[in-house]
Image (cartoon, rainbow, N blue to C red; front, side, top):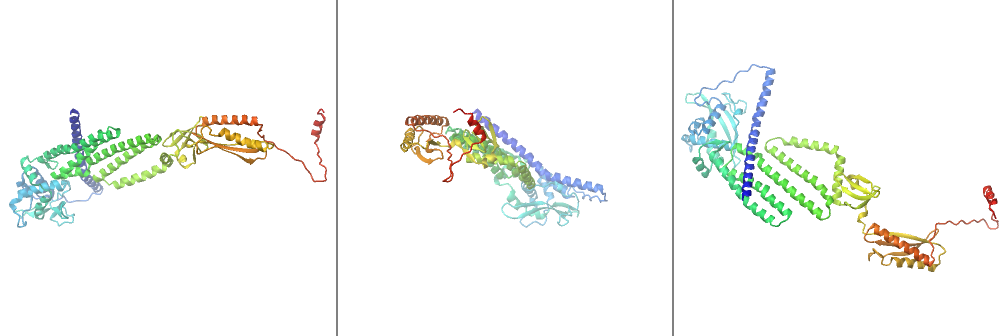
Length: 573
């Protein structure tokens, strides 16, 4: 029980830390546009400083009780009044003239409240980008008496509403900036799309009107409640699934159970939190957090990496049990590469959600990948050769092979090369790229050892002795040691050699134990010699007979050289 509570506290702490990190990330992302604008403005000022030109100072706005002389001051005044909860004052920033007949100007405070809620939930407005000129922004393509703060697209239709500030006359005829009556007329519609529901309305009236990151206090309270409820909802099915898996009492099921109760539970928890947050209605700031998807991407990446570990460990165990332990050497780098790819994809998706231009990044990675591939083509060739060898399995560790003039036993199949212990004791290292493309003779996989031997006997051997020789060898090899029923020995008088008569015999020794085969061959050879000696059958030696002749009717003349004559004269009779 104590362990479970500790685990819950740990998960909640991790979630809170990640949420705070995500909020900070969203603030950084949303501040980028302002920073970029400042940089652009600074660069423009530097250029202007290089070539100074006389400029007229922007005209100051008219004196106004609510500071509505410029678009920026009017918008900031509305925000301050609304954040203070003074919606009666905030209504002074709305143009309530010439509204539709079904709207009443006395509803100004409620319209101001609804507009503030809609702006918090649907539109991010940077006050630094709003004009400080009393005449507004004259280069935005709008009529001179209007400035745009942005537009909001409805959830249930393609309708888009422009949020406009407009110059309108005060009672004394002085022009000031207010939210245009056109925008005010759309506030009820926008509130049906992005405003509070009946339950939220009740909660907003119960809790104090305190706003943080675009959320009121009741929303933060509901959010914390939903975090706890979401964890409990994610806890029940994952605990039950983990319990069932652990009951199987195998290493794989135990690891799968741990996978279910750790990353899968966290992933499900985050998905439920996102669902509940949509019900509350995230502010623009918090919507930036969820659009970046930091928490979801982190949970998905964590789950993917843990799943890769489980799959590759199970695969390695399967290869070991099936006698292909050498193939496991490829699993570790492949597992690491898979994790790197998953992490890179997660980072790219997160950067894309944050608004960065990932196209240039991907293009750079592609060019860099081509350069690396060209520089490391031999290494890549050998790595691919390793994959081919370990998948095709032309040889395994411990088998004797003959390849490229080398004959020995395979000691190691690495990622780059294969190491062999040659019969003379030396070690040979051959790149796997060459091994994969070479002709390999796998001696270790032969099912038997075949012996094919020719026994020469002299030409003057009588026919009955020749037949006896064949019978002797047949009797010696009959049902011999290591004989397989499907491979009986064969003995034939098969050839007339230039200097001998040839008897051929073939036998197959099972299993292919080389040293036992040599002992068997020695016994056969000695028994053949004993039996041939008993029967007087002689082995033929390599000899050459020269016949001298000349035409008929002419005597054969032989002339000896002087050296031979001298040597012959000294030879005693």
